[in-house]
Image (tube, rainbow, N blue to C red):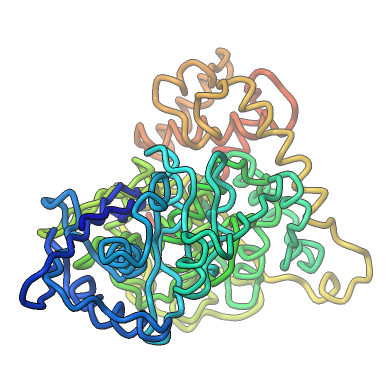
Length: 510
């Protein structure tokens, strides 16, 4: 008898349909699995056999052929265990083949029959809906992340026996309940708050501008001045993610296996802080299976690189193209994928190896040669892609011990959201999400300057030797400052403040 069941595969962060066909015929007992399976898929036979035994079902003693179509696409991972088991049961007569119509299944089987979680469940669920599937049998620990897909009944399965009982009509599985996204956002909690940061008004102002426009930031200052703490507070002032952004972020984390079990949609904007020993592959993505890297896991969020000069030079240079394009193309011999990488780069560093260069209170112990070598680890092209560079000085003792309350993140987030709404209304629903994503043509349209500002910008270009990219990024920052002030046009004060965030580059990298 021939039986077939729909399943799903994962390529990058995109799901694709897979048809699992099982043919059971009389003859010498054998088992053949075809359809370009990898080692994990080939090993499914023993897991399926043991899982059936745990359900008191004998593995068919017959000539059994299982095909995973399309046969020219490589199938990877253990996610095909559950559909293979169900297709075999239908082909051997233990299940009605008609019960598999309109149903898809994904899941790994344990030897005891338990259904274990898989990577990329959300992407698979979205692909299943596009293929016309009306019900998806999914591991229970993946059900919450896939339940947000409208028009698809997500059926959580804990054990193979539950899937069999549902298809036989004896113990129907209730679809996973869907919680509206607006209600989910109400559960958002901010762990780090700017009210805990003492002083640093100018740095907070700069981070507010960065959050409002999605700009990259480099903080330069001595140890203990609060750079890391302020970076961790930054996601708390970013606007709430839209449903589309939340789906995209969740898909990336699910495909990378970075999503916690029984986790639903990610509501908090991601904050990734890889150690400075991270490799270029781990940072931008790649490997034998072309997995997403840290810059993609920080999509729509913050990628924080602390102690920037300590990072591998090749790893930092590999970020230059993703920072400019907003995506990463990973091509390997056996796999290729394209991952979104529209993240805010927030970096922090000391001004010298001892950290006290330029300090007014602690003398620097480094020679000029040591300082030049330390700063030289960061290339000019990478600095050119950082919109805002600010000096963070040590906080005076009187401000540390002051009892006056600091402004909370919630108040700052309201101003940031208002600025983002102005940008959205100006750029349209189909345009860039923030000023940092403006194309050169859009910069010319929305960042027009009057004669006085134009003359000021020309003098700044001559003094600071700004490149064309630096000029465009300065105009974007000025546009964001004007949005925060509620102004339609960029004024001289806005441009001066934006230019001030390019000054540290000339002070340190002469």
